[in-house]
Picture (cartoon, rainbow, N blue to C red):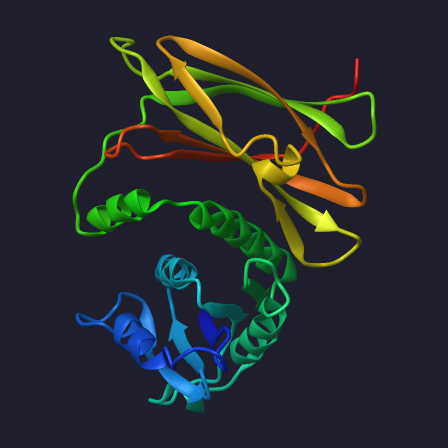
Length: 278
């Protein structure tokens, strides 16, 4: 199984050519682990590369999402062997899938899509990437600076809290739900911990095959961007949310961020399985 990334610059008619800078970044030395064929310009403002490892592929996609300037298509499948020396001379189903994915990405809210030989797996990977895109879109400059330090091998403290029970209950009105969760200290409660948490729901809207991600402002009709926490032992949350008509939720993601710069965030994803209204 091979991973082919086809990437196209967004708004290329109104901005400068970003391809040379991108190629320098993606083809940096020493050679990126898992890169089978280096990234090359294929046509216009489009770039393509071939990778053999999922982790390396995700790292590239994170870099592209961070730049916020690219449509990203990931094709997962086989390629015609042996691979030619030039990326753009390659062929096979992974190339075809990547082309289809980047086309879909141009009408996707997060500008990243996945197509693969195993549709179920491709859909799962796409769901994870959409959740990642939602998280990365809200990452502050401080958060990216810490992530860069991590990439250089520096360590980061654990957040010091863990999620207790997480459940969703249905409201008495259609589309109304309450997310119940508890944050609990995971170490010795010697001091108060503080920070924020956010909720993200992904699913399908209007029968479309593409996933949609709803962030906390959307879920609370603009009332909440984040939920603050400040406790020594534990803190409970009962957050009411609204799901738009026609939207079918699939997963709930909980992101917990510390107020300290050197503390890693906690992110966990749960299947959407609401309890009936009492």
